[in-house]
Image (cartoon, rainbow, N blue to C red; front, side, top):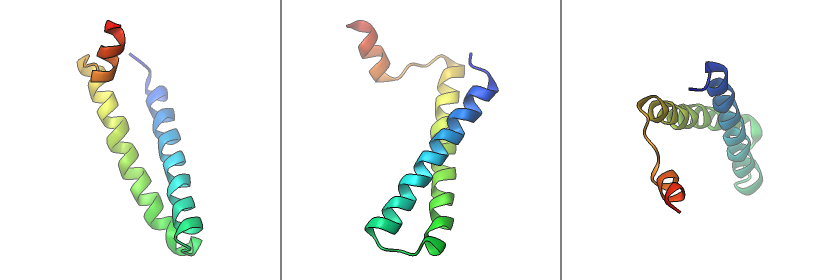
Length: 75
């Protein structure tokens, strides 16, 4: 099982990249001011990354494979 630093680094990478994507969409596409866009982008990226990485951690602990992984192993 991966160490806790592995999960923390994955969480930080997921949150950071999602934050950058949400900021880019809000500022560049929607034309919203950065000062107004960053709090909501940060909140969404923190929560969504926690759910995503938390579920991956849960599946790893329980020994569950995803459907895609099972299909790739059978080929």
